[in-house]
Length: 405
Ligand SMILES: Cc1cc2nc3c(=O)[nH]c(=O)nc-3n(C[C@H](O)[C@H](O)[C@H](O)COP(=O)(O)OP(=O)(O)OC[C@H]3O[C@@H](n4cnc5c(N)ncnc54)[C@H](O)[C@@H]3O)c2cc1C
Image 1 (cartoon, rainbow, N blue to C red):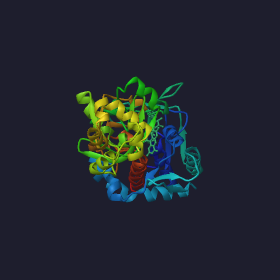
Image 2 (spheres, rainbow, N blue to C red; image 1 turned 135 degrees about the vertical axis):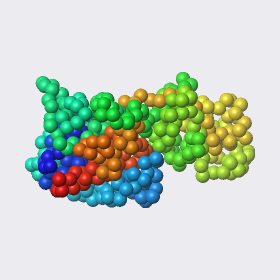
Image 3 (cartoon, rainbow, N blue to C red; image 1 turned 120 degrees about the vertical axis):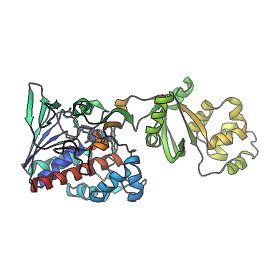
Image 4 (cartoon, protein in one colour; image 1 turned 45 degrees about the vertical axis):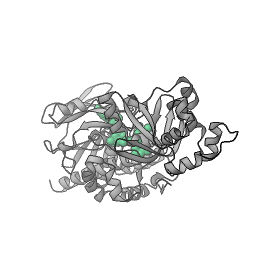
């Protein structure tokens, strides 16, 4: 084998193209869009969080049920390896105060330019953009069908790496339409669902007008038995942001089964209930209750508006009840924002279908990487790191097969 077909030029597919060509292997790269990594570019427009610097034990827990699988992948390509690879592309990285890793100066577009140049300089890669993969000709799965603006083509491919992404932000090319083709290969799959997504709540009309995307910082959000020290964003439609994303698969599943889910927010996690009572029991003087809360507990305007929206007038004015609610404010959510807005998706090809080399067990000439597979992780760089680590492992397996056919 000296030629590999890569289908999907997102971070997973393009990283594989990089590693294979650097190891002397010819690649044909197909993508439905007019250029590579459209979603990566969108991710980069709001601060490209490439990975996270936290210790590996904590890092792997972010992958929930698949922690062991990712532990093995991260052994050969972890956050430090990703940062070293960025350096090879002349992209310096830094660790932000939250431990997240970002490029220092370069934008995603500059990083992509340098990455693509490295691939093209090998003269071993041929890009075929505006080519949509539409299925396999038969169950042998070595004849791939593509549709371009002008024709439908059958491509013979002895060894193929698929990295077609999930099913959010369709305008970036990741529309999940490939799922049926893999179902036809009798692989176990799960329909896509939004992950790292926002949720709706019926705020009062006044709150909707006042809220205007206001952050809640330094809070603890709890759902069922999970609690996260975090931040989130209140929006006219409901709630979104880091802390909500991290709990989003569980909140989503609850809403799907019960049409509602109740989270709780501790607005003052550093103060005990006793301390809150102590501060609330001081004389209020001529202060309005809002002013009194601001002075005694640094409750800001957004928090006041939120408390007023959730609590009845009596609850808000009863300082004992208010104290309890400051530590555990119940917020009922009643809907999931559309999948196309989600940062990632759950669903795709079951992880049980692949081995540790990312090969399909039933079709070992097909490697699958990135968001096509049914795993979840919160935001924080864990998504991109997973895509790169998978592509790394799959590419090593392809390289080994090339050198020992
Ligand atoms: C707004 C936003 C911000 C994000 N920010 C971050 C972040 O800061 N950090 C982080 O870790 N992650 C972030 N992510 C998530 C991250 O971008 C994705 O997890 C990652 O891009 C997935 O990589 P992938 O290679 O698996 O798939 P994708 O990036 O989705 O690429 C799939 C490729 O396959 C192509 N394709 C799909 N179907 C076909 C077909 N039928 N035929 C041919 N080609 C096809 C697509 O055109 C695309 O080029 C963000 C996502 C969004 C939407």
